[in-house]
Amino acid sequence: MHRDDVDIVFDDIGSYPLPKGLRLEGLSQDQYLGLVRDALAQKASAGVVVPTYPQFRDMIKMFMDPILDPDRSESPYLVSKEFAKIPELEVAEAMDLKNLRACITGPVELYLSVFGSTTYTDILFLLAESVARFAENALAFGKVKVVSLDEPSLGISPSVAFSEDDILRALEIASKPCHDALCEVHLHSALYAEPCCHVEGINVVGIESAANPDYLKLVDRKVLEETDTYLRAGIARTDILSMAAKLNDRLGINLWDDPSRLEKEILGQESPEVIKGRLIRAWEIFGERLKVAGPDCGLGSWPSQSMAQRLLSNCAIAIASFV
Figure 1: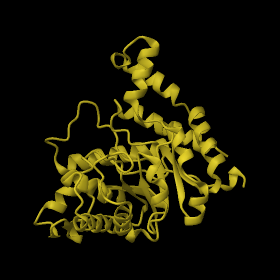
Figure 2: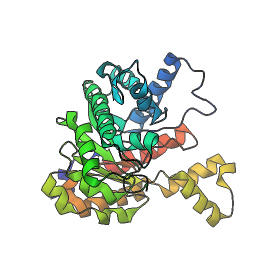
Figure 3: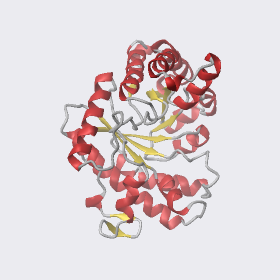
Figure 4: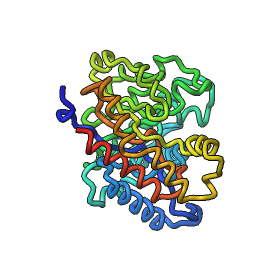
């Protein structure tokens, strides 16, 4: 199969820096949604084909607050359908964007935030149903092309005490509304990539393969083919703290004291050529099973919106030149 036969979907994971010096505290709803609109426009301008609403809010609280609110829940841990909404998507719907990605914190991650290493499966499944309601409402926006269930603790956190069967059942419940859309599971470890391939509602597994290229070795292309699942490959590093620390050691300076030099060094390291090289490597391993590509994770920890936007632009250049 030739590379020019492959249509790679370019999306981003979600989080994005706030404008320099700005905090969310004290902002009105209209002011906050204005920030969302501006950041989405920046992502689209950078060339992100399926941008995610900027996840400025805490990824746990934005979902658990309505789930735990008796006035917004149908029963304990089950949010009412009318309140299972993501306001940021309403802003995006009004913009001139063709496709959107909705990131929703997954049921296991939500469970860990409240119950830690306990194993109340009934509550896990209720949280999964709540996630499904957020997904269903998100898909009601005609522009949402991708729904992502964010499960960064799977394969990493020792607090995850559920059996694999229970975890996959929870993900199956959560992803049930996604039968007509791309449904990603966003993982920080590749250890759960293959099990997630067996979840009926999930058709894309995402792994952070830019910072951890060996993760690609942990995913069997045959499993992807047998389960008709695709791969989302991370092709640009976003772990800026780690990258800057290594550069500081090598250069013998503190790049955080010189923002322009920091930007030059980081984006030189994450150039379009380097990013394209990672994309080519992933395609050589997975071929047509490679469906989605973009940065490893969110950019919320980056020092400026302009720097984050430039990394997204580098990804766009790399993907556009891939063929």
